[in-house]
Length: 205
Ligand code: AMP
Image (tube, rainbow, N blue to C red; front, side, top):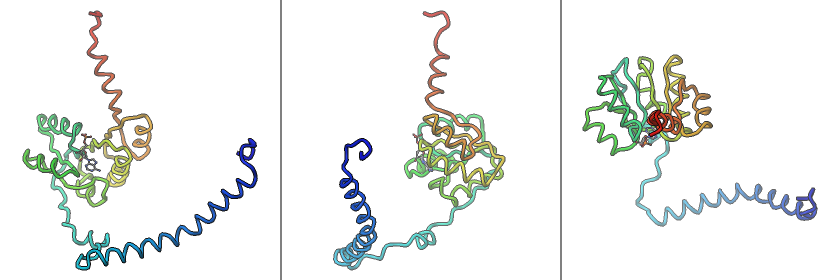
């Protein structure tokens, strides 16, 4: 702005001063907010239990039982994509372990007799229970490529030779997942396009 003559020198100095003051006051305001929150909680719910610290939460959590499956497929996410995958693998009698975060989907899996680990596959304890060292491949069928990247990275560290196939919605996501160790990334939109072209009759009618 100053270079283009849109902002006077004085304006720049004021912005700079504002930024410095805001940086200085930020920690003080946050400390003040914490104290305010604590005193408000004390007044509102004197009988309430103190918030659980993350370590306490971890200690309270049920231990995750590792799977006894070997030469199995590990499928992360049992939604629109994972649901179709598991149906087709069941037809082929391929041993399957699903990692799923959603309670309703977990209940469906239980009803179908499919072995599942409950929780977020990006959680190191959850992914470690999937016996990836002995798995035939890992299918990351979740829509969030950022979380998918975390899952892929940890799986790759647990088994450097594992065939990891992941799901993406854009070229950027493909690159991201490959960078984190995916062997193959399936770009959904491309697959839809290929399937459409396959259905075009060569005769033109
Ligand atoms: P869809 O987008 O319909 O294929 O559904 C994705 C499925 O993946 C849903 O059932 C989600 O609960 C599940 N999901 C998403 N993220 C995770 C994750 N990090 N760990 C385990 N399951 C997940």
